[in-house]
Image: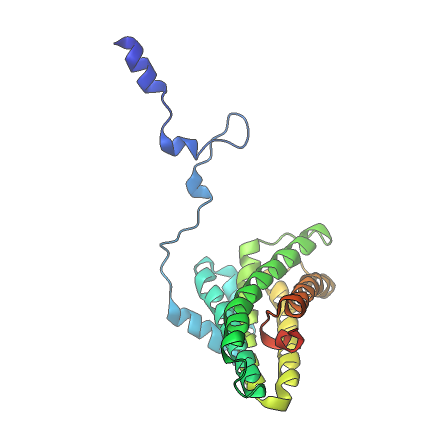
Length: 233
């Protein structure tokens, strides 16, 4: 009886398996690493942040970077920017091809292109954060940087007007350049330790890799969004 009791007491609990330490003698609950998927989403806040950005209120990026509850609303701003950018690019392709690329371009631009743009944006944020930390020794919480850069990416909604025929490339280029400049401002909004030089170089590294990968994807796989649809092979 005592032997059975001892075996029962030493049997590991399922939750403990996922809470084992990464170092000796330490235990970290898994809840520390899992995101709160039940966090409420305030779509009104998201629209307010986006509207203020488009109205020229650049301080909204600093506000979002300092407010933990703006994580989901700021990401929603980024997603809206990507989707409208993809929609404008897709409509340009459909109009330019007189409807011949309707179904094919919907898959490669609206769906795959938008997903690739979001993943590329996440990579850009990660590389910018890494450059700030490793090259310039600037410490900034990656979530704060993500929120401010997500708000900045909301400017991409203007790429919807790429559907304007001959002006398509010009619209895409101007909006892309403006987006990069806003990303530099977003870095400085997220941390006062980053001067102009650090912000410009760090964003340049992140955007450079993003643009290279998106260009290769458009040329080799025929998948793209925004201005990169002009490189579809």
